[in-house]
Image 1 (spheres, rainbow, N blue to C red):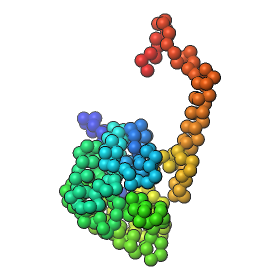
Image 2 (spheres, rainbow, N blue to C red):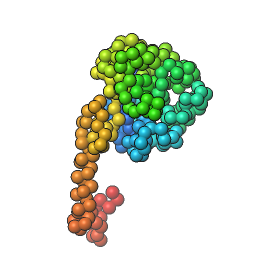
Image 3 (cartoon, rainbow, N blue to C red):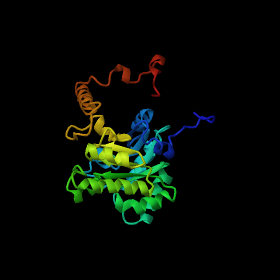
Length: 280
Ligand code: KIV
């Protein structure tokens, strides 16, 4: 804590300096209460465009807008006092030109107070990454499986097997040379993720990649076990909150129907003793 009592956030250079050091723990968050929990334990909080699927029921990330990212980014920012906040640039807000990317990224930073943006793409996005970083917008890159390219790829397939390994390596090298301070490697074979991690001078953040990466990221709702029908192999479920919530909601509905809820302790009376807890 500083002399003024102000929060001390991890900085972009500090995250960059974690190359080859203690692994970076990263998770997504989309709301203030979850951000508070993640902030206690993680180094980097990502407001991913996965918010579209995790919270809004979209079939993929393509329908996510800049306004959604700003809304969730602001909510998450209110829950942080330590972790570095990174926010995804959504599909259609940055691919056209470096200038378009700058406008979207500058809005994200100004309106959410995030420290960095993330964007998907390798060699083809290098010019944009260089444009942004030279204009004070730190960029986390994202190569391998890039979910915004789901239709071109034809699904959420592992990237970089066999002959494709060279292409994914070139992507990672290109974004590092362009000035990205870290790079997400999504769904690439373990050996390739290891070799890229050894090759690039910036931290690699794996998701479905390798324990050798300089950090790991997961979608928080996946690792908390919120979804019954979505269990990618690369997710370890640390809790079964979906089941717990299902049981709790079923118990509530049964109590309401049997008039067991509310109980005497939940309703308000006239006497002074009964005024306790009235305001909460
Ligand atoms: O959108 C997202 O949450 C992401 C991470 C899973 C890397 O891009």
